[in-house]
Length: 275
Image (cartoon, rainbow, N blue to C red; front, side, top):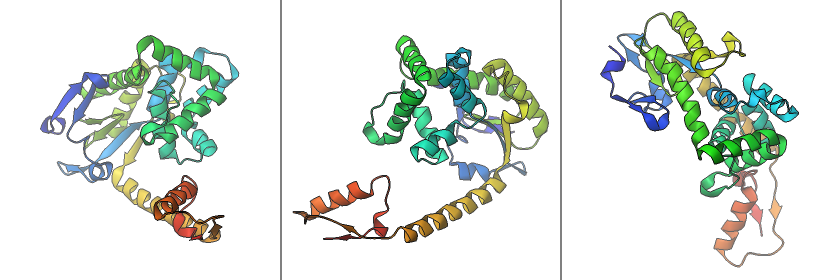
């Protein structure tokens, strides 16, 4: 048994997604799971929300240059890298900010530490005005967060069709397999995506990614070490001194100036302040 041994329920507020105890575990812990002697293998629907947003909003039916280019970036899986390059974010930051932006009708407010979301919304408004207007109009008609719920419904229908046939564990836009014919399940998932999510214009090889999570853990650790080493080298290269024109009146004001100076761009440990 696998899924039956976990506490799970269907969450209608998330478009019918199945939630379970396994999904609540940190990803690194899930990667180490072994059930009936079988290590975890996951199948991830690639760029699920951006690509489904294209279908929900029918953006691919518009012929405006910005809408065509946006559709190209999404369908080729390059949208997060594009946003990250122009907004100085890594892929993970761009992904979180993009999904938050689309799910809040591209609102440009930045309260609650959502500066990245606001930056993405402003960028979409300027670079992809057709997409921005489509999102605003849909949210006005159906309510805020309606786009996200619609995407999750498409996604849940595709995944739940596989869950009913195979002893697998769903985790949001992923399926975890512990034993069984992974390649056969992948083929069935691709067909389910085409049927329930409308991805008929995306190549089969670019829909689903199979990951061995024990190998992914090692890769993540190596990438993290490389990023830390690169950041250290860049910090040493750019090390210098910032001179303040006048002396702050209090330690509190000094701390405020320090935070403002290092916000977004600088690591204060590499930029000592001389007063």
